[in-house]
Length: 361
Ligand code: IPM
Ligand code: MG
Image 1 (cartoon, rainbow, N blue to C red):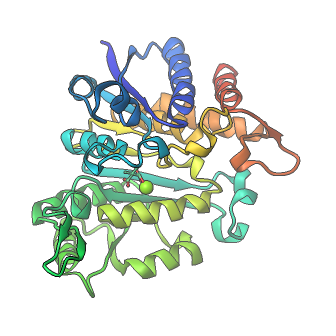
Image 2: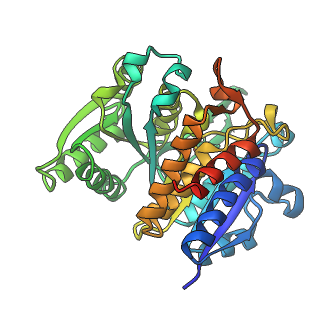
């Protein structure tokens, strides 16, 4: 049976990094008869340029009929002056929302070969393996009302709404508890319950859901403290679960523990395990087209796709092993380069992963 992957490269470095992930998937596809077929679509600024919208109907149709989506990144200075309703980011938020991909898994793992690449002391990050579970289709990103309005005194006022219904909190909590059960059974829920009523409810509901998971140790932490703890002693965490915006911020911070934001993959899943897979980093317009971006976050995202949507654990393990082997071979893109290593391009890094696969990884 064929498995269709909608490939949405997007903007900036998106096309470069996605090409490498597809290269890796194609290699495994040929070796292991995975039955993967690929179909490309437009999203973000690339879609706006052709269709006048960052999330065209064709792309929605393609994503819906596909079994999984592989996405690069969206956005760039070219589209920054557009009205917010058609900015590239709206395409990304639109697809997350339309496909109901509410559970966003962002694993931060330190590859031992990169201990020196982190700005934190090696002993702080050595052996790091945490999972951030970010709620992805609710909260302040989607809450209504929102906008910029004119006040009676002639001053403009910007406003957004932070909302979570109990059912939204409950489903992301279940998702996070189940993930914790498969790991070290510790879950830390991050909120701002001391100030925001919305997250007071968040804490209450997560605690309630926790009663179904007596084998998981649940703790709660305010987001400001969590940000500090992530850089002070990140290994205290196993799984973190948090709101859309807090998860956005904390996952960027966590990426630096791993040496580079170019290393962090993600999976965004719906209630049935259908998913979209993308690196957590952005489109990096400053280095787009130069062939120097790190494709490993996208390649590892492709690995998550094989694991979570296609249940191909062996193939997923092989991607992770091959990334390890490429790092062992001392090849490094600029973001993770250190002395004594060989600096390589985006495509050469992809090739190094493919060669490791061919060599038996
Ligand atoms: C991310 C990104 C997006 C987000 C942007 C590009 C809309 O920062 O996936 O973390 O804020 O969710
Ligand atoms: Mg982000």
